[in-house]
Image (tube, rainbow, N blue to C red):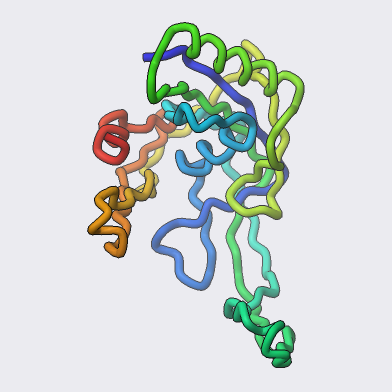
Length: 215
């Protein structure tokens, strides 16, 4: 196991859509591993390594917030400009209900997994991440589930404590495995789920899933 790294993230709103939700978006009660990995990659990423999320600490009480939003029902065709066809947005709008989270804060614990591990590179990339996180540097603005839910991030303090809540969350998306064989490029991707549980404010990510999905 490499060096464990931590990042504190917080924001006014968050929306981690549950897999069983359809048109109406309902958020998971906590930050998901896939969203956490996206946040880490926004802060620091290199093609030489992958982020492995170990756990997520929930720092603030879970609060839900209900909103109605105007959304476009369909994807605008790519040839709409070249064909010079009219596209009236108001005719394609739908009023959709979303149950979001508000006033959230988390501490993500993760490690850098090198494709060709060496102690020198492990220390180098860990130092680069810590330096970027302490300065608030990122490749693009990270967000909490959806792009309108932007976040703030920093290195955590030593006194950060998780909430005391324990609950069964249900099936949560871990990752999607894509076929690597050239003959199976057209095959469908395989989603991997796990039975998520919050234990005294901490969501632990099963380590065996990384071997199953990433090999």
